[in-house]
Length: 129
Image (cartoon, rainbow, N blue to C red):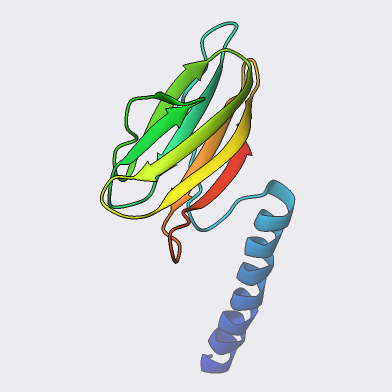
């Protein structure tokens, strides 16, 4: 009896590993930071969403104009006309910064995930939702 139980246990582990791998490959599910962003842009506009994963606020500038700060460890959405914008992020209580052009598409959300990095550069991943 004990041998049968042991065999069943050893069969379960590989099956579980196959199911996890299939989930990742087929459906794209992830283990870490599988965030679902609920923000929907208003009609005719697109949005930029900053997912600030820092322990400090970010000063946000679009085409040189000051915007509402992206609060620490929070998501902040900015509804914008479609187009290309120069985005500058400046860490409030540190030396981290980021500057780049981003595209805002009508009906879509451009997501900037901001994480700490070494030196004065912030780690920013950009994706669309």
